[in-house]
Amino acid sequence: MSLPINYLILIATTIYQLIATWIEDKKAPPGELIDVGGYKLHLYAIGKARPTVILDHSLGGIEGYLLIKEIAKIARVCICDRAGYGWSEKSPHQRSSEQIVKELDILLNNAGIEPPYILVGDSFGSYNVRLYAHKYPEKVIGIVLTDGLHETGMLNMPLSLTVLKLFFASGFLMSILGSILGIIRLLKNIKAFEFLKPELRKFPQNNLNAIKRSFCRAKHWITMTREILTLDISARQVSKANQFGDLPIVSIKADSFFKPSLWTFALPLKAANQLREKMHVELLKLSSDCIQLQAPKSDHFVWVDSPEVILNAIEIILNKVDYNNQ
View 1 (cartoon, rainbow, N blue to C red):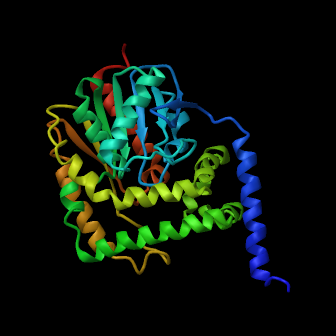
View 2: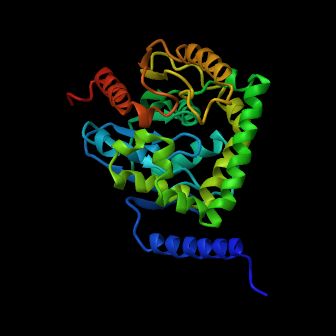
View 3: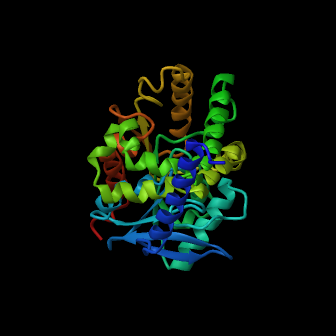
């Protein structure tokens, strides 16, 4: 009895996924794999001028690869793939900000990346860099938040946004299966990423490949699911990291959470933007030297829509700490 054609297609795409992943794994990562206690995390560092810019990505994102070479022109820069993303191995520990910060510090110490650091946190990454600066204030001389989150808003979301968060989590769970079956890799090959986010086309293909490689793997989506399900735990953990004296902070504010489009018309955009407004007011209270930069052409994906604003923010911090002249 022959198998239905749809089963045969899924068998073929799964085999293709296994072969493609095996071929990718034969290639060396761009950076180093550093042991942090029984599992290894990937750290990619380029540039020579101090201080060192540390990039912590959004929930599920490894968007730093889009800009790492541009940032390296003005400072040393490190991408630290969180456990489960990119070339990093999975972590057996809870994916909360406390654990992520612990792993980050061990990674930087074991890799010999000496402070001072300028921390750049995107979206969920803003929690992690704030908590790191709170725990290790002697190591941090500035922070950049790209459309950052604030716990007071995230812990008091209206019902529509709570439902949206659960909708995203369910999508991540479905994507685990999609990555195993090779469906996401096929979508990558037909440039579905660029179709959904046309602004990606302006970046070199090599930069995009590092990001797409991660999204094609089940561990990426498993980690996204784990992080979003512990988002409230992370929010409560970071609530103590809200007084930074006169530490230079630049908070980048996007124009909206999502740009209105065919793909977003059913989302509660008004509620999301109202929540963002409240969070950005709170972010400005983190330091007496906290300024806000607008990204008027950008939605929440500032790294894709307005990368020049991020470079500007890092330069502002560099000028404040006077490292350009040292």
